[in-house]
Length: 261
Image (cartoon, rainbow, N blue to C red; front, side):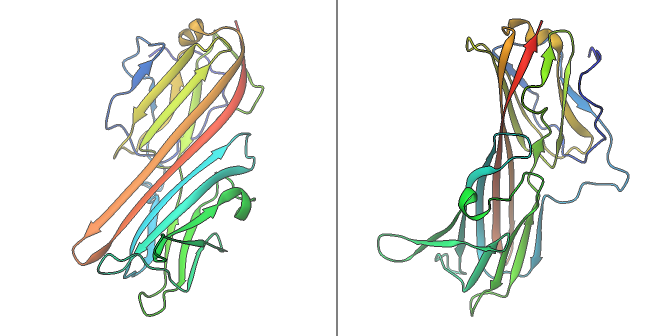
């Protein structure tokens, strides 16, 4: 791969999972066989689990969340939804269930039965940032389950801030943190022309960032470039006699860069 000078400050190797599938380049393709830049595992060995369970729950958990960051380290919008089910699959509410110390809202179906917990990020977690580890806690499970905690470390791309000037002469290196499963990265000019990368990662500890070759910017018109990303994390744990644990988290980021010839 051509490793031309980059306007991005070098980023230390982060612990991430690696490639399951080759990447797909749409709208503008490169001759590179892989624009992913390999690295090495951290000094302390394998990456920390993105999802950690503390305690011994006797309920199944489905955790589904999605957040949007529109400015660098700015306020997030989004929603988290949680479903808890007992040993025979009935959805249940418990006496004290929280995310980041904030009590989740209970929602019921048309028959008045427990449906799901919901938490709106902008209303209940205005100080939440992408760098934060999520803590889902059942502090009081009543007669149904003992207390437990699920720690979730969402993945994210470390994007350049708004108004960053990029050029058609330099590659761009975008590091990430976390254990990403899938990334979509799109750059769109004012005419609607787009450079998009889609790739998936699995069970590989040496990958730390993605490189966009400078030549791929040739199809974009100089000026304002809209940058959009979607990062997906999922984890599913099923074991004999162990309640099901399912976690899905999406991180979306938005930026406006300036492309110069």
